[in-house]
Image 1 (cartoon, one colour):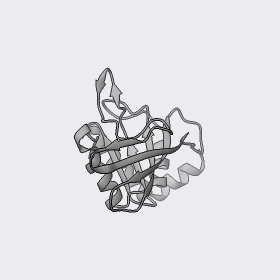
Image 2 (cartoon, rainbow, N blue to C red; image 1 turned 120 degrees about the vertical axis):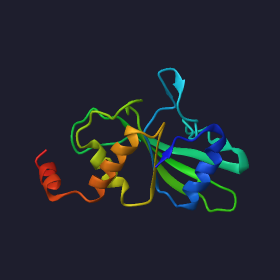
Image 3 (tube, rainbow, N blue to C red; image 1 turned 60 degrees about the vertical axis):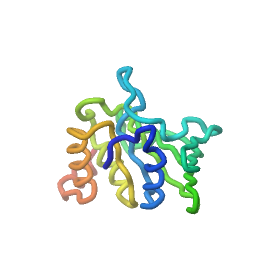
Image 4 (cartoon, one colour; image 1 turned 45 degrees about the vertical axis):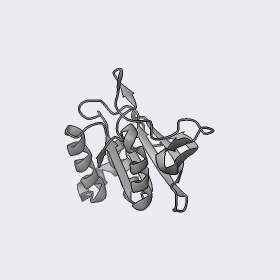
Amino acid sequence: MFQAPLPKTCPDFWYMVVQEKSVSILMLCNFIEQNAKKCAEYIPLEEDKPAVFDGGVTVALKKEEPFTFPFETRVRILVRSLEVSVPGEPVHNCMHYHWQDWPDRGVPEADLAPIVLLSRLKENTYVVHFFKFSLNFSYVSTSHSVACRPPNELMNSKKHI
C-alpha cells in the first residue's frame, strides 16, 4: 500500500509495478478532489494517447469498462487494461481498478463491494494506493484481511445476499 504517485515518482512507480510483476493496481483516490490535485496523472485516460514518462517508461490504455458486481451497489469502479513498457523489460500488462467515489476523508459507505473487489485482486500480486495514509490504510488493511481469509460466517451471509 502506497501513497499516490507524484509527478516526479511516476517512472519509479511503473518500474516497481513491472519489477514486482503486479497484475493489478487499486486506486483509492481521484486525480483532483475538492479542487485540489491529489494524484499525478500516471495513467493515460484515452486509448490513443499513451502516457510517456522520464526514462523511457510508456503506459498505454488498451480497454476501459465498469467493474461488475454480482449484486446491486452504488459503488463506482472503473477497470482499465494497461500495457506498460519499461526499458530492458518485456512489455507488462496489468489491470487498473479506480474506485471513483472513494471519499477524500474517511471510508466509503459500501456493502460487500470492498470484499468482492479484494477477493478478485488477491489471486495475484497487486498494488493499492490512496492520497494519504490514515483511516484509508486501516480500512483497506482490514478489508484485505477479511477478503484473503474470510470467516465462515461471512461466506455464509454472502450467499444470502
